[in-house]
Image (cartoon, rainbow, N blue to C red; front, side, top):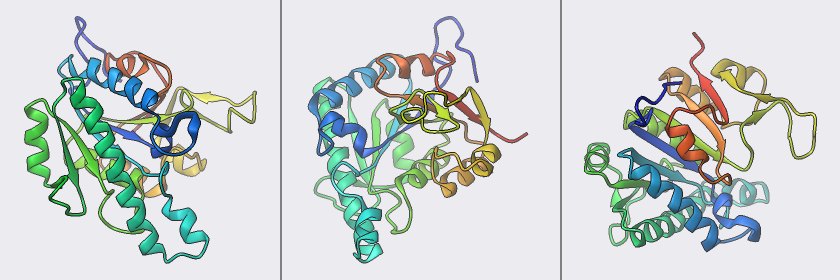
Length: 245
């Protein structure tokens, strides 16, 4: 992990992967405005350090395509519905950030020009260079791919220094720490360990994409205020996932 020097951030461009459920808070559905405000406060603090921020957001707080598919809905239709849910979340984050004076752009993998730009990699990079937070919505634009895979793909495309995976626990464990008080936390892992041990960090397609492109991942607890800034400043927070060599 890079160490921050003289109070400067250890990373200059990051991609933050948020689950839709994270925005729901204790409500379990929709967008909890207090959770959203806490998230935006952390993002604003990091943005003020000069860090370029991109975000991929899921839609599970509104609609989960996989669950609908398992219940009998056509998988492609269910996934497209899930992609539309991510757009709703992206607009919520955009509104909250801009109310705090942080300029943003939402780019959607499914074209909907009235509310979002189409995803164009070079345009996204230009927005980041100008200090705008770019929120990638609608996953990859394709069914059968998760927003985890979209996050890995976008992180590689924009040449991010780090993929930040926000969760409800403070890293990766060998079993569920909520159910098992003796669960062991990993400080560092290799991609191949994540795949071979079947650790539920991100889906295998996302991990493989990061592995192929040597994209480091840090898994951290988004509910601990200040933890995101600690990661950016190079402090040991959460679990770091590194290339195999």
